[in-house]
Length: 127
Image (cartoon, rainbow, N blue to C red; front, side):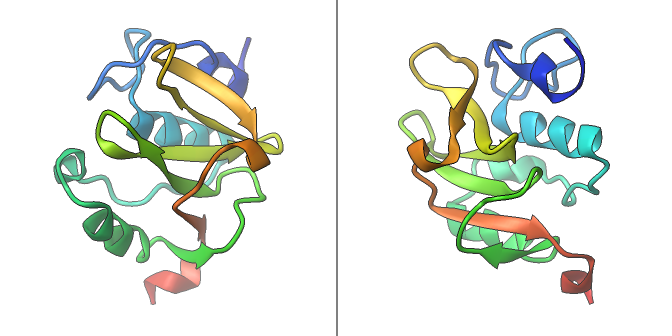
């Protein structure tokens, strides 16, 4: 496997960047954005403990809020039992996310993933 599909099944580990196999939700999104050639939002380690409101405010400088994550590379905040929310990324008409039951990267069709908020890269949002 190469490209974005190489993330499927990778085990979850909080703070892991994927270099040793494990990955977390933030680094999953950053990896997919890199594969797609889309600049990533500025990374902030405080996101691991921040409220969704703080994270959303930071992401608004990277992209614009959208109603429906429909394009590869759209970033979403999704519900999580472990940390209240998690990052997910749109790819191939679905959402790549950390599956809470398997604790690994999983893909589901977009309509099956409950999304709190979504953002799409927009260079003009930085102005």
